[in-house]
Length: 261
Image 1 (cartoon, rainbow, N blue to C red):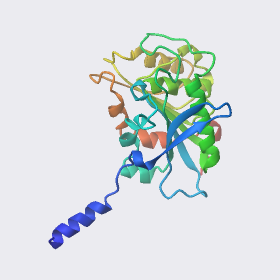
Image 2 (cartoon, one colour; image 1 turned 135 degrees about the vertical axis):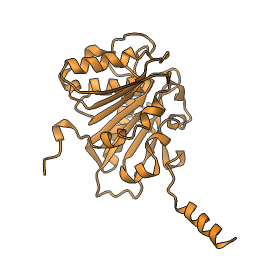
Image 3 (cartoon, one colour; image 1 turned 30 degrees about the horizontal axis):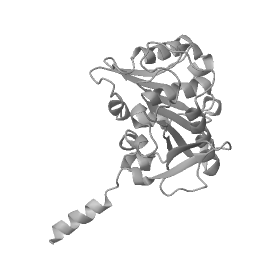
């Protein structure tokens, strides 16, 4: 092998790789009642217990439901774990997997409107318990806990912030929806970036628009990108927006905003 080829080979070895499924630890959560939910956990590289890390709770869509504890990573890894992002924004990423025929939110995602159930679904309750267990096990910044999701997971994102607006520092909801009647002043104050596509035939974009408009009526300032021509797959475009992660990781819980220097 020539010297030039050797140098090229060594250079390739030094190129950081995006996180893949192998970097996410496979776990199964069991609550006190014996109910279980599989999830994957990305632990920041060179984790230091003296550092408080942000946390992303990621909700997948309907197509990734199952028991393989792998499919839920399909649309999460390449989007938010590029080599540069992993270095610039070291964070825990929790990706639970919803069982087949279950939903994060018991609401029809293809309808033009829906009422939020009185209680979170069983899968959602377990996902939130996973969040509690991870933040208790590791050194995390409880003022920088973020929720994001796509499609069925977009509904989960809206469900989380309308039920627990003081728990999350920011939310990213892609082609999801919720119950606009549950938007309070506290919900409206939540930093939200929502996405959708005008030609989505699976989840009507009006579902997101209703949530955004409800927040604005209550004095909120959500971001909303409505694409065209993407159909139901608006997440690839949304997750590749260059401002998304800088915006997300720049958010802190409103009650715990960092003091001015």
